[in-house]
Amino acid sequence: MGGSGGGSTTASKNVITSIMNFLPDNRPITSLHIVEDYEKCPKNFTPISRTYDQDADADLWRETNYLFGRQTTRYLCLSKTEGLPEYVVETLKVIAEKIAPPKEFSLLSRTADSDQKAWRKRQIAYKLSKRGTVTHAVTDIILCSKLKIAPDGFKLAGDINGILICYKTGAIPARLPPPVPGLTPAQTNGGGGSEVEKALNRLNLNNGSRNPKQPLPPVPNAEEHDYEEIQQSYQINSPLRPAPRPPASHSTSSGHSIGTLGTYTDVEGVPFVINPLLKSNKQNELSTLPQLSDFALKKDLDYDFQLERQTLCAMKSSASKNPFFK
Image (cartoon, rainbow, N blue to C red; front, side):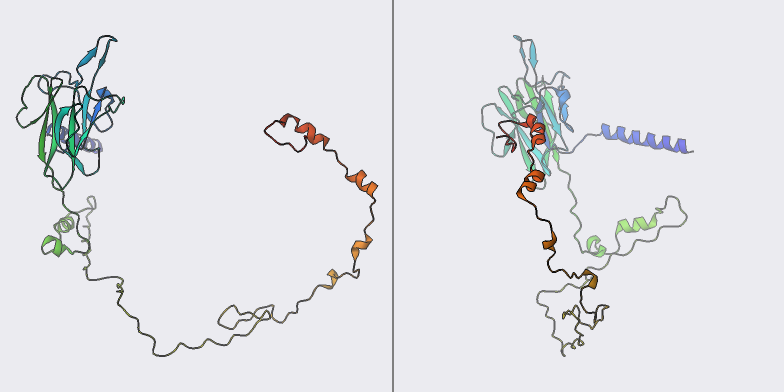
């Protein structure tokens, strides 16, 4: 039973994936790139490597270097997830290579994979707009190698070296605003409980358990607070009578008090005296030390540091200052 259930789940996921791949992706394009090798397209970008009308190579450079036997290529890549957050590509234009782009338009000047010059003779300029400021954005781009006009549903941006650049626009899906904090379900839904809460209360969310799930707790009223908010204008009244006096504290032997209440410690009343064993009858014990002559001092304390000189001999250099070398 477990194996058959897992197989049916996998089959359902495959069917959903096939349907999603078949349906057109109407999300707005958020970023564009130009690459020299379409197999090195950046992550989360899709290269346009074939033309729409003839399924031919969609190279936009279209020039072969016969002298060195190397072909230079340029491919357009698009993404619907990367780029500046909350920005979409509103429109496209094809302009000459050495002409400044129109106001608020951006250019692709270098290839993303090899950092080479992106265009030859003509180039693509695109306009980024923030979501919420526009209602339509570019949802698809195709390249045509034989057609002279844009196909149905597409707009013509221009041609680059004989390749037509066409794009499609679509409405940007509206995003519901986040709920306003503090509003009750009656205020957000126009009266009554939340439809989602009602649906969840009717469902058994305990994975087949016979005990139905308890209803969701009601949302507290916006006027109810666990903690009262104190306004700046709120004034605290002074007490009607003065505070009581603290009790008199008994002074310790040190003469300092460590609290407001009277305390008693174990050292109170114990006199501070030195142990008699530590007392010495000799007032000056230094006089009993033996006298050393200069000859004895030189004989016992003279040291020539010969061992240190031999040890540090290998460390001598002009950069280091060794105290054992002069």
